[in-house]
Image (cartoon, rainbow, N blue to C red):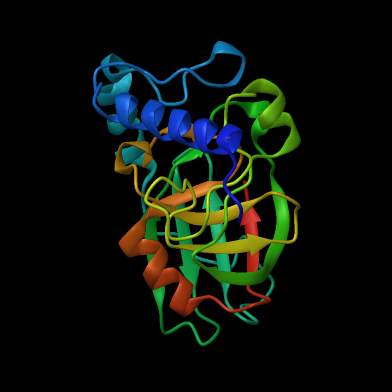
Length: 202
C-alpha cells in the first residue's frame, strides 16, 4: 500500500488515540454516537459478577442439530464463545468482547467462510462516517490492527471472530459488531475451526 501524507497522518492519529486510551484504564473510550467503546470501570465489578454466574459449560444439542464441521456458539449476554469439535472430543469455552450496542449486534446462524492470518483491517462505511479521522486501512501484522493476528470471517459481511491486542476489551461491550478473543484463544480456535464450521450468535 502506498502511504501518502493524508493516510499516514490518519493512521498515526488513530494509533496515537488508541495508545492514549490504553493508558487511561479508569476512563471509557468514546465511540459510536458518543457511546463508550468499553464499559465504565466503576461498573466492571458488577459486570464480572453477572458474567461469572452465566459463564458456564453448555451442551451443544439445544442449539445445533448436528456437529458437522464443528460448531461455535457465541452468547452475547454472558460474553462467552463455546466451541465443539465434530467428533465431540473437544470442547472450549472462551471469554469474548461483544458489540457496543444492540443495533450493532447481529444474532442468528452463519458459518466460517474464510480463515485469515494477519487480516487487513478496513473500517466499514458506517464506521468511516462516524469516525472520518480513522485510517482507511491498517495492514495485517501491524500492532495497531484491531483484528489482531488471526480472524475467522463469517458469511455476514463485515462480521468476524478475531483476536485483539487490547486485552481490556475482553469481557466487555467494546466492538462495532465483531466478536473478539484474547490472541492466545483465537490462535487455538483458529486451529480447531474449519471453513464451514457452524456459528450461532444469540
